[in-house]
Amino acid sequence: MKVAFISGTSIVNSDLFSAWEVKTTTTPYGQVTYKTKGDFVLINRHGYAFPLPPHSINYRANIRALADLGFKDILSLNSVGSLKRDLPPGTFVSCSDYVGLQQGPMTFFDQELKGGAPGIANNLIPLLIEKLAPEFKIHPGKVYVQFRGPRFETKAEIRIVQSWGDVVGMTAAHEADLCSELGLRYNSLALIDNYANGLEGTEIDFAKFKDLVKDNQAKVNRLFTRILEILG
Image (cartoon, rainbow, N blue to C red):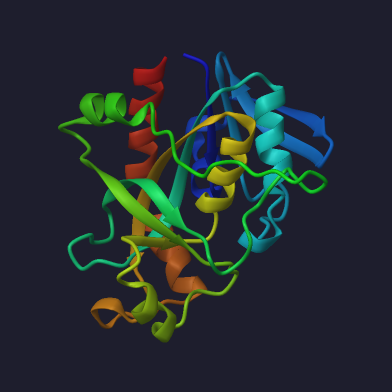
């Protein structure tokens, strides 16, 4: 099965992809470096040099590159914060909808009076839920609330959006918008690395967040090992 993966630094830095071939392609929106093996391609949304913060990611180049390379099925792995007490850190979720009100949607239609219908296809998720069980439980149908970054949300912001969705992040809504515009099928997988700021009495900062992501590295590596077996 021909599938493109979009992930963050925890996946790209994993030994799992160290032997994959590194290539670069040029799009109208800039160059994109990716890793490839067989029918799979992996993009680090933050880039392979100095990791870009979420608001500086070249989303249009990333998604256009995948379309130009002939990929239709996109599987994204995102690191998210939980807005719900019953979704603790270490939980895997799949989001079927999203809220992105803090900044305008990312779009390819700068010069056309046109826009894509938003949505997340999740066409691969039922297969993954079935085949990953019982080792991994994926909680589907969640709602992703996107903030701009690079800072984490304030406690007051979290109190406001807690009823809007299940998890909070900074990247998936942009990617889903762009995939919809190009007719690509976006699939959402997300690992909860922390409770959102103020939830369960927690406070979050970047140093703590990096430690939490590092703690979950082995779990993510194992998940992707299984995903590659299933989709291969």
